[in-house]
Length: 424
Image 1 (tube, helix red, strand yellow):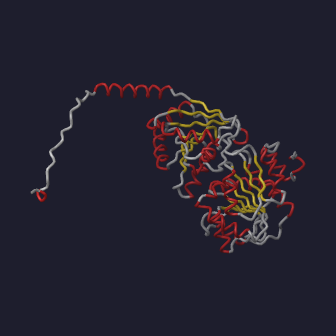
Image 2 (cartoon, rainbow, N blue to C red):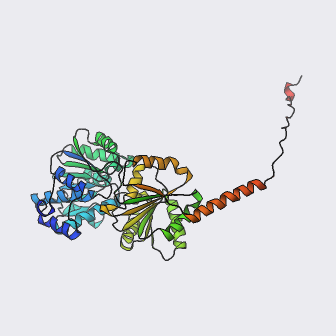
Image 3 (cartoon, rainbow, N blue to C red):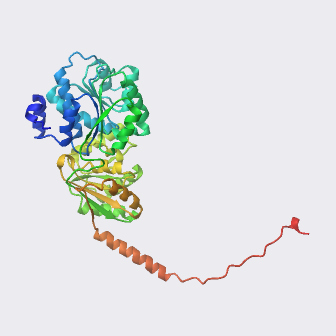
């Protein structure tokens, strides 16, 4: 199928594409554009950075404009997009509003808490598209503030995350509510299709889903070079310092598994590099702090030090590299972390600090993405660190030789004594 931007899209969307410099659709946009116009529900699997957001934004906006829902009652959206994190929801809202600037549709994001001025307007003003997380949407639907009678589309972005216990119960309740409605459902993911199959079986057992697959499961974009840096666990800070001095050109993200380690590394790097820009992002921050820090990083660039909260769906066009200070525990998170670079065909670099304890993890990751011909995993040698390792080994050997060998002595067996009450 061939879709021509200049003829198949309405003039308002053509203006948007021209403004953004998009001359053609990506593979997932081509396939989803046609599929979104058909009646069946969809499970869509495509690599990170392949243009998934626009693949549902463009056909949905075109549908809304063609119908011209002028008489929508307040709190009755035509389309709802679910996202597992606030950061992803904000990013999706941003894309919708960029398109809405040309198409003149009404887009709202359901924020955390019900008392904010933005949320109050949802109750009294009509709108076309709502972006929310499952828990907040369920709360508003159950309370009657959001009504689903006009709903035509429900999109779940990063749907593989919604099978986690923190989301699944709420999403199951949303699925039961949707049994009364005929809305088209599309589940998007960049990871294993079996996860989506499990989600469908639990939440939408009575619906039939057609598959749209671009690339494959756990795929990274072309143009990404990956380097493994083999280090000792205690050398990670030193290696990161050398990495920033010699390799970290442009803007990037350093990913860690634990927020405590992220805070510690942030403090150390700010002390070592007082002139560089560092930003911190982790799950224990309030929504206000996370939003402030994320917008600061989006504006100023530099280096973002983050846990996996920043790995899901965040679109940062200026990113040049990702450093996995800690390897994630699952290949799924590796794909989402590394998907922050190489977006929309741009080049990118991934660096992994691999210590002795990471053998099983790196093997699982390599197996999960092993069929990718575009992924080039290389060992990046750091001379200073190799010298440190040799010196450390030599020091251990010299210490071992300096310790006098102990003479072997026969252990003395003490005479067993009989308790007094047992004596005759």
